[in-house]
Length: 149
Image 1 (tube, rainbow, N blue to C red):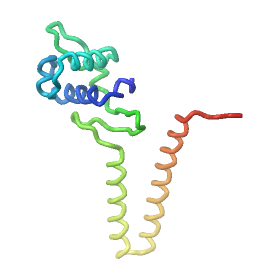
Image 2 (image 1 turned 120 degrees about the horizontal axis):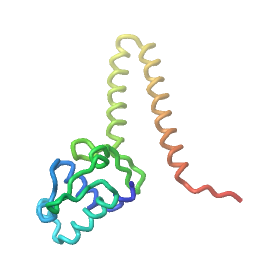
Image 3 (image 1 turned 90 degrees about the vertical axis):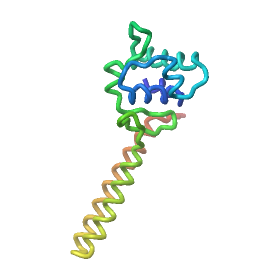
Image 4 (image 1 turned 45 degrees about the vertical axis):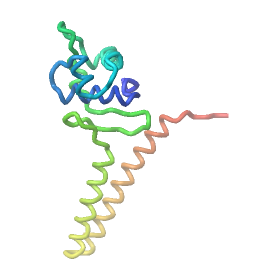
């Protein structure tokens, strides 16, 4: 299913449908997204239709299917995972940065209270970050082809 989102305009059309939360017409999407060709919009809508993310309504509009409504993650060919929240794409990196900044502020605050507890907390943050990075690395390695001689 993720191959559906290999084109950035297809992602744009999908997010438009998510934000709209109502059936979308070809001309309406063309106008609102600023895409000149209605055949281009048709192509992207049909691509989403083939993937069962959209369904065609009797009045020739397109609406999200249950699969489309539940779709909350999109992986792009660049191997970056994004969360779909209220029709916006949010990178997993944003959550990682928020975690590290919060941990830094907490660690500094704890240092003034008790340096030993601050050190233990910092060590736990490093371990959690190492686990996160190891999981990302293992996931990427699983995607890479293995060469055996």
